[in-house]
Length: 204
Image 1 (tube, rainbow, N blue to C red):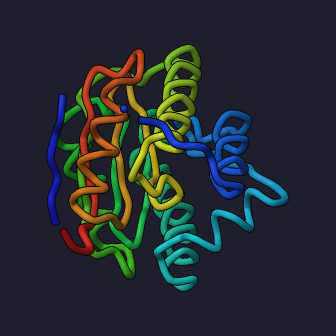
Image 2 (cartoon, rainbow, N blue to C red):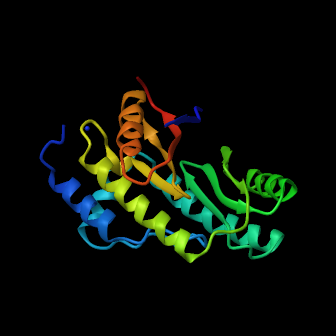
């Protein structure tokens, strides 16, 4: 499973992409407490229909995030700095922790959760970011998602976007060509300082 770092023609949008673009622009993604994105109506149906994960995996991802964050808070206290994102049972940890011991403790806890297949630990040793940073990350994720929706050769609905202090993390089930195009599109978005890919590759 590849984890790499990487420092646009725009065709007419299909009905699905229009729905997804509206969702990306108007939705709340999540703050440091990982409040789930809220999308209603046609956009939900469009995203569910094209998600490459099985329905079981989608459900397990939601369960893992809720369970994991609860256990993290119970274990290290409500630092407000740790975010956990699961895609196809692969977990991305982002945010801030006070020391290396806490960083290792969080990763060990998450690896021990049922159904977790892999963990990408991107936790930084730093004070927890405030609401201003969280709002900036939310806005950046929204801009990146919109760019992916408009990018040629990218199935944006299969990609999850997480932003942390200007760094954008991309997760999803993609081909290598799709992953490369998505990373390039994200890197061109204003405010992005680095793109980290945590994709699962399904082919060339």
